[in-house]
Image 1 (cartoon, chains in turn green, purple):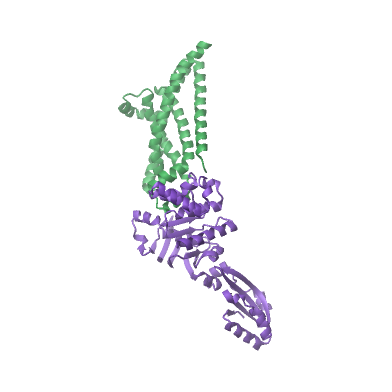
Image 2 (cartoon, chains in turn yellow, brown):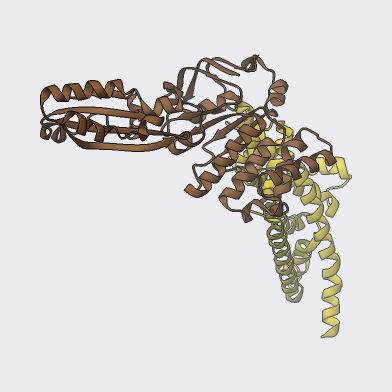
Length: 220
Length: 332
């Protein structure tokens, strides 16, 4: 019994570590790329603080196209890019590239909807004080919607966990890879169940942390 | 001095164009409290937003202290806005910032040094009487307190003009009074020009020196508040003041004698003209309708009288009333 537990743990821990690495780094990349896109979506729309309706339409379309590509297909499509940047197409580091790409348009939309929750009056008041569009973005839109942004990022992380498990099927490493190799291919039920339990715990922990932080900073 | 000339605003949406303002001409003097009154949809909000170009006028010109507002570049416009404070119906405070940070916000935008900002914010907190709420968040304040913070924030950059967009419309009557006294105090203490838009006549009566009445995007009447309210000429103003344009038919037919409308302003409102009239001319005076109100510290009375008796006496009594310096309108 003890030996079985040790065996499972020795398989699980490195995989968990890989998953966390992939998810955290991809989340950072997708937020760094998605935040400006989300901001652009909001400020360039009609009635926004930097109205550019045709640009807004083009950007919206591009984001929708990216979001409609299934992840497994996207992963294969970006193999050349992964090879170019990381030097390989397999392993956790290589997987970060398609994960970031798939999450970026998602983040852009999540951030867009968070920023749209900001009271139009607060923006108008800032304009009446002579604030520049950049000041409105950094000092009004983002701080005012921060609790909602945190919730959005939490949602993104959980989504990326789901995608990272899929990436396991294509040699991505992490918990998904473990579940496929041991659970599916070797009929190792113990490892399969343990993987599922760990994933549930990780998702719960992220959701709990996200809710906690969002609530803590919410002054509305 | 603010000069608005021939300004109009047209909204275009889905092949439909809506004219919100047409041919607005207004001059607002330095240091006065100028009211713009109208029902909702009259174009008040568009008008006040055109002054600091939160909305772009479709036509016309706006001058503030001899500066053409329409020709300013974006940067110049931002600099000008820093000298124009604005307060709002829903306060529009930043919910993620404390009271202190909200008042400091315009100074932060202007890049004012921190020690200077702190000094100014504390000064303003004292002025609006909310120094103890310094570190509270807006959600912890009442409506009246939020508006005080809004006012403090609007004054932070030492503006010369304050725009008030229905600032008391979502407050209860008592809080409205407090906010209005604060505005009055600011106006006299800082010699600040204030433009107030509102649909509440009490606001205009209480604080404004002059008023423009707006109806369907046009200025229908403009002038001194006491004059406008004591002798309203447009139907819009009359309905605001609560003067019925025409007496109900049954009252007119019931009354066998003459009917006159009497207007008292200021001192004359305090004289016992009617009892004098009845005693001297031996006529019967019957009050058909009337009201007395305080407008900007002046008493204004409006009375509709039916006069009965000997025809000669009635005529003489009307003549006498006219000589008393009262405004009289013979209705029948």
